[in-house]
Figure (tube, rainbow, N blue to C red):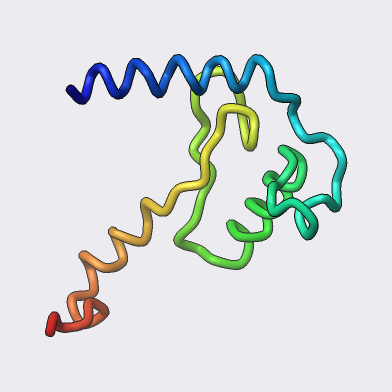
Length: 90
């Protein structure tokens, strides 16, 4: 069932990416709630610069924003090295 769902999702996503244009106009986030690729990279760079747990993960076919992803690998490392940082469960 999961593989069928994945195949349907992949086909839909591929079709949508082929048909829908990539946002290129900056400043449209406030009106549409969608970041352009350039806005995403700027926001990601700001996040990486201000919060040390975030970083760019370069993926196949691109760098930041173009095939890249924002990740928080150091967040789990910090929690694992500092048990008092994990709040007790209720």
